[in-house]
Image (cartoon, rainbow, N blue to C red; front, side, top):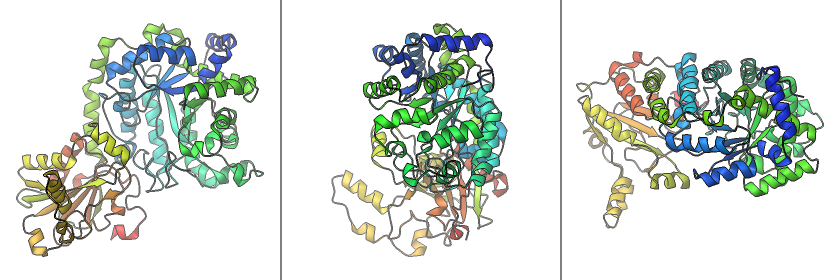
Length: 588
């Protein structure tokens, strides 16, 4: 059974008594409800009241909204909760993961590029200070995966890098920063470790294929460090670990192999018995295909709890899932011992946070304090500082290109490369989301410094304008993209290619010449800048000067212009991943 006197709980007898007495007084429905985190879909009081009174939820997550609205939602959740509820947020990169007006500070890979643990600590502190200001008490963070595979779009920009030592140091620093906020917990993710497979667990299987010793020295090292520093909770990933699972259970067949969240070998034998983790475990989202493709949902739900997870992330259909788990408990599929163990960890962590000792009205800060807390200048200043420190000059073959000055490169053409996108990207754009245009922002900043900067218009862009004007597009523009080199370069002194790719691979509108693909790197100086996914050299290996900026925030672009004008020696960051993507030609 769970020892609530040990890490990470450290409870006193009176707190342990509250846990035990509460469990003893709970109905079957209340016990089952505590096993679930649910994603709220409305801020309406009646909806939130029903969630808490009908389903007795143990935890909630929510979609982005302004801080004042989230704080009011959280007040209602706690108001109608018989047992104080976990309210979790995704503050892995800043307070913007808690609410729309929170401060983005920096992604994991950006923090990793600085190689300074203090920034990971400040991220954990400031991001979750903003989260606590609106009533959150748990971060689904840090991301302590290791970015081994450049094609893994799930974590390549979110992990602190590909060095286990750096990932461990920064994950622990984030945890300590979050723990500096009274009554705040962290659920590190995604155990047993993402970053090897190129596939996305949302839509396919995901495999960590390390041998036992290799895993122990890498991902295992990260989790041991976190556990020894009082990690509160772990988010289990839907990640198959075939070699380790078979080492723990040699009788396990390939057909019996389960993702970690459904695997007792991984969630109990490895995590509990071998690593000694005594804290709470919550699954990653239950709609992800890497979990749902193994069996019927009615079998999957109780199996996650029996495998060693304590909480299940998100209903599919609330009534259906709740009834499934209630029947599994009443029928003995989930044993009394396993239920009590899970509830002990859930309530033990709530007691560790002191939620049981505070009046419901005190669990969420007063409304008048929210706006002031979110506007604190120190988080915005930290963002600027990290932006300056994180800019990474990954490749610099054309020495002498930097610094750039108006006298040296008066005319600068900016080429805007976007991601391949998809249906959801188009929907978000139609709804007005997606941020500004970094190419236009960069152009304005360069113009303010005295450069004559302009944005390249491709033949495809020109044809789109013709269509928008009701004209028949001149398709010959696409096939007539090539022209004399002298004509192409005569109106510019330098090209800056801005890769605005948030996830995955870049998309080039032209393949018949033109300016989007920098085929002309030996004809004119070219600087390629990754403003999102840091793996653009895989598709633009001919780049001779390549910089990773990691995002296109205003502070980042300010720092970029400053360093471009100062020179190569101003770039002090170290590449936290292999930005050459393991490709020899990207280094040429």
